Length: 169
Image 1 (cartoon, rainbow, N blue to C red):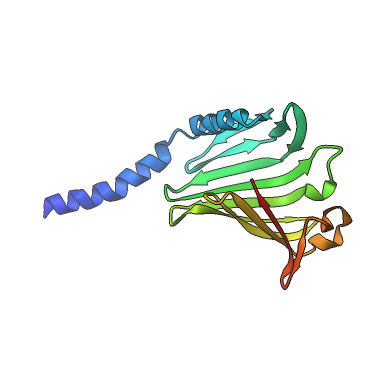
Image 2 (tube, one colour):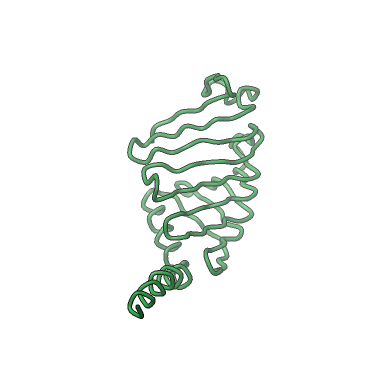
């Protein structure tokens, strides 16, 4: 009986310890290194670690050395089988369409559907939702007001629920 009790306690405590003691900053630096291989650089950020995640304050994104966007903060957290990233106040660089800026963007990934990541957010294109198919390398993004923006209307298709953008990467 005592062995069963100890096993149950171990099964509860071990995942909690892994979540709390996970090297969050080191994982972020690994992500940064992977993005650098794709010619994407994140700089000027301040990292703040918390119990379940990491907050990246005031990051600036560069693509090929040119400024791409800035954000107020990025919140990353993981519960072993579920990971979520929230970006607040994403503003694209001058010279890019301002409609690409977003108030909020959220990305979630779950082990229950490992080949798919879910997107949700709010921008000047309206409410955004969509998914990224990781194996097929496709992005599908639905927007409520996307077709009203002339700069993006040619990239969007009309659907019964709004406007749809589809792309392969």
